[in-house]
Length: 448
Image (cartoon, rainbow, N blue to C red; front, side, top):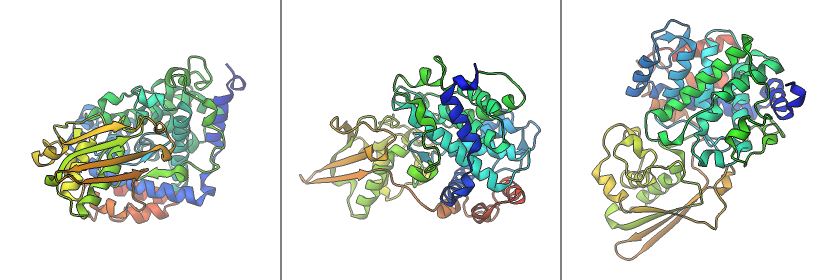
């Protein structure tokens, strides 16, 4: 197989290695903002009990130069990629991208951080390669269509290895042939099922993907062989994962004309739970501000477009981790407390005061609406509340809520620790290899 006989793969590879996001100020600014948001989530997630369980299980005591974020320890690069990616996703507070239909940053950045501990790169090149990796994941998501996710795959896990390999090959200046093989090795490791939502294994998907992509790039750089046509082959990625809904040509068409990090852009989470539940969270907080009380409510109905609640796999959660995937719980907690905090979604059993209201909620689908897709305009939720006095409340939320500036989120997530206080300003201005080294040093410490 030659590259000439693999036109989709070749176009994808050439777009990856020849990209220069540094010429686009909007893309670079958006990337720096996303990095701050990711680091907030990762520093907070580093203290989660299950992060320690994972770190021990995967051998975080192995020697190496790669940092464990929120810790003063260093370890092997592949191990660090797993643990830091898990920490970034464990609280379900990290960003999401509509085209990916998943979480790109918590997969790509841990692998790049691990590589940056081994080889010297400028901070500007580091940020640019993150933009390229995200672009690769997003373009793959668009090209797969909706069936990939709806049939049970978790796109964070399946697209993540390829996005990581793309970012690393861009950063290291890999050749066309090496990059094609790296992407193929990453694609053959693509795995992750949505059945794990609500379990510790769901955030482990991010760790799997980060490690797999980093390993794929390492193997290809070492001369390891692999198929160079993962997009074009008749038994390749789209044949296996798109379920006849794929359009492989979308992976490179108009690449970077508007970077995916700019349009449609990332959604930076305002709430530490599944993104698909955020519209009802915002409606619950809004109604709390208007004085609505739980004991006034008879029934609650959420109406979604077809496919829009595919990730919301829990209706009756038993603990806060499961509750991240329950709009019934999310809305009830938001309405009753007027806010959603990390402690609403920890390992403790859910509270009766919230579940009493959640039990009155149900869902339906508007089959006349366009099926939810990567197009943000297809996402909405309609809220209908029947009050005990016979009155009704009707609200609609289009799209997804989010935040534009994660500075306050960073401060909250790091508990205002002075150890990390310099990080947001450093990330916004970092350009040199020295700046990136300074970031690694600041991340490689515990809360003070």
